[in-house]
Structures are given as C-alpha cells and as structure tokens.
Length: 123
Image (cartoon, rainbow, N blue to C red):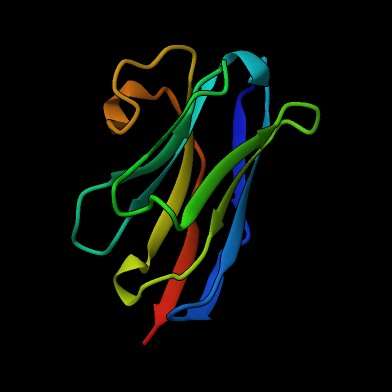
C-alpha cells in the first residue's frame, strides 16, 4: 500500500524558515519522481519543486534561491527546506510521487499524494 505522509508544517513569521518532510512507503522510492506542491485557500494547486529519480531538480520561479528539495533514498524521505517565507506562501503543502513525469509542475502528472501539511506565514 502506497503511503506518503508529510510533516513539519506549522506557523512562522514572514522571513522565517521551515523544513517539511515526506515519508514514503509501499513503492521503490528511489525510482520515482517526487515533488512538492502547495494549495492556498481558493487557489489552484501549484508545483513548488520537483526531483527526478536521477536527482535532477526543478523549482518554480517563486521558489528559486529560497527553497531546496532533497531526497534521502536510504530513509525513503523527501524534504523541502523553505527559507525567507512570505506571507502569501501560506498554504497546505503536499508531496506527490509518480513513476514517470512529463511536466513536473502539473498535478495531473502524479499518481500518489500525501494528506498535506499546513504552513501558515504571518506578516
């Protein structure tokens, strides 16, 4: 049974940092493409950062220079280090996985999703 479980969300002031984790099980983690998405209230889900099975990384323009996606194959865990958080980045953050991905930032490219973790950035 495939499971993705996010953790690490919380409340932080603007300019602060958080590190999200996504523990995965039920599939060969090292061979999958993984990504972080977020969805703010009333908005569409958007890709934040993605990492291919070969380690290639992509970031949304808004995340470049501030967010870092990494994966630990030994621990079957995906991470997202978020620095210099902004007020408008308040959202539920999700991790996603798929065996193959054409467009990393498109939610419909992913088969498996976690339940999400809330990140709240106060001004």
